[in-house]
Image (cartoon, rainbow, N blue to C red):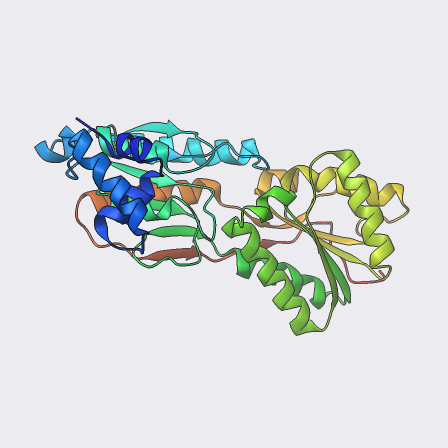
Length: 335
């Protein structure tokens, strides 16, 4: 039986374009629509999908889309995957891992073949290319992340905008007047990854509200990248006394780079981070942080997806409130 990916390949378009052309949910050029319709006729494609969908049988498998893209931090991805697998097994489901880096082909194949009953999608972008297929296909889905337009989707995430605001509020409350955000690698922002963009929005909004001088710098990983970004910050924002880090591997390298340039943490510089609690607690200077609750997010995503499979109502978007834990990396300005 022909699949949506076969139609897409024959027509020279993406599976989401095939979905749009067949559903009419988005404008498609006449030439593209004709190519899709011709491919549908030639291949005998039927929109009712795989045998599982028609028979009503369940695979007892959940798919987890974790695209291995540049700039992702594998340990955090692993935490999400482990939490999803653990929660799924507790509900008598196995997990199928989809690691294709771009596009919606993997989800399209799962939809066509009936290999999984539903899919959990991670690394969500503000304008994610997987959304058209998720909206138009029969496969239930939950997103760990919130795109710009979340209507018709089920999403769960940490409230990253509030997390950025909370870090700045904490630093402003300690009297700091110049603050910087050392963010994710540049490619994460180029992709318009939702969590990274929203944290920048929260950081910037809070800095403006408190009247702080501020700067936002993406940063790669490693000691050389940390040293380069610290040198630039001290050059461009000489009054800097506080930093928010949203780049888990850089926590220790940044502290080291600041110390090498004569700024002690927290004596001269207060530092907060948005990262998993174990990373913050085990840093060379234990770091005040907002935790990224990977285990809770994975478990909630599974819970929401299983409820959708049972036909139970679920909320559209669930945002977990950020919680800040104070450690020894922050102090009043000029202590």
